[in-house]
Length: 200
Ligand code: MN3
Image (cartoon, rainbow, N blue to C red; front, side):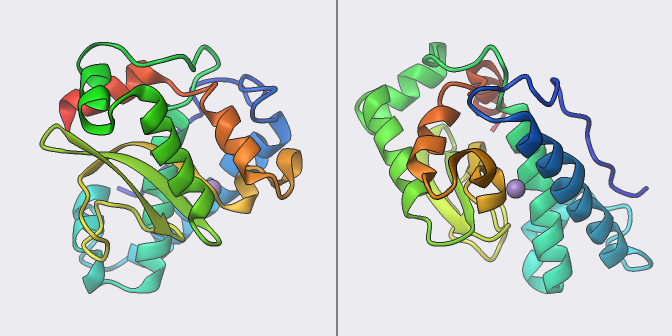
C-alpha cells in the first residue's frame, strides 16, 4: 500500500492572513505531494513496502537519502497541516498548559524558546515541541529530519512543529522569518496538539 497525500483539513485560504492561499496551494499540492511520490518511488520493490512511516523513520539510518528526505517530508507536513486551524491561536488549556508552565515557566517563555529555535535554525528545517514521557522540550532539525528519526538527538515525540523552509513563508513574508513565526502562533490548533500530547 503506497503512501498518499492527506487532504488539507481546511480550504487553502482558510489560514489567511497569517498564511496565504498561494503558499498553501504550492506547499501542499506541490511540495508535500512531491515528497509522497518520491517516497513511494524510493521504497517500491524494497523491504520497506507496507511498513508504517513511523517504523521507517525510527530506523532511517539504515536507508538511503531518498527515504530520509522524502519520508521525513511526508511525516513532517502531515503533522504540520493537522496542528493548524483557521480557528486557532490563543493558549493551550488543561494538562498541556500545566506541562508548559511546569517545563518552561510560562506560556510566554515557551513561545520565546520555540520561536528562537525556529528563527535560529540555519537554512531549511523545522522547530519542534516534543513530549518525552510527558516532559516537554523544544528542539530543531535541518532539512526534513525530525525527532523520531534515529539520526537525530532524541528529544521525544513531536506534538507541534513549524516548517521554516523558505517555501513555507517566502511569498508572503520574504526574508522576515520572525514575522511568519509570530503569525504561526495565530493558527496553532492547540486542541490537536493536546491530543498528541496525551497520546505521546
Ligand atoms: Mn515544507
